[in-house]
Length: 291
Ligand code: ATR
Image (cartoon, rainbow, N blue to C red; front, side, top):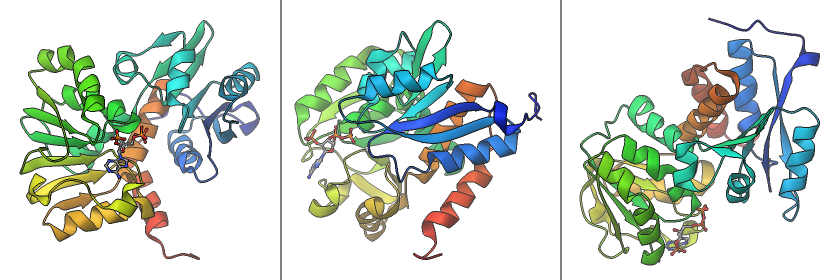
């Protein structure tokens, strides 16, 4: 099971989550569990990057011998731009959540989309193939997952956004990819998003908490799986809305663990078992304050 034997902590390969803020990131806890489970000698930390010094901070980290980093808000675009090589799914996203510091330069990947797809199809057990999918939002979060969603071959994906032009630009950039996979891909406004989708993915910002879900409940049918990419309090208004309208709510915790597992695989060549890690994280997140 463990192709690479555990080594003393002193020789652990170093990784970090780079962002601003990073204090509340759950990635160190997730990767510590992956490392323990797989016997990999990995040390994973937080790397707070000043807003105007992302490149310098990550360069110094890499120069110190570190092997890679996860990248979070607001640096995913900058990380993509800094890399010397990019995976096809990072190219589609035009953003990177994972860097691997190779001897010949930095490899940029984006594991968010495959993480979301795996959470939906494996953890939630809901098929995407042949289904109708609504993706709400056209910011970095939604753009980051569209390529892998297309690869899962749903019948149709509608990207609905307040600013339609942003959705149109992202859809245009994915048009060939969608055609290759036999997926109907459309950009729409919030008022004509459509009705009765099988799967609804919320990729809009947490700022929605104040203004409510900006599409009609007609987008749901009874039992529609509705996934928020957020988790914890940020996801609550969306999940409550889904429940109130007969959908099946799901937060972004599974996606978080799955994207981490894919990053771990890129770095280490070993795929961790995500189920126990997701269960442990779920217990922590759902625990009442003070526990
Ligand atoms: P991220 O990188 O996290 O996706 P972003 O690029 O700021 O963040 O994108 C936020 C998304 O939430 C956008 O799709 C935004 O819509 P616009 O493109 O029209 O700005 C959407 N969003 C944020 N607040 C919204 C609101 N009150 N109503 C509707 N959509 C909202």
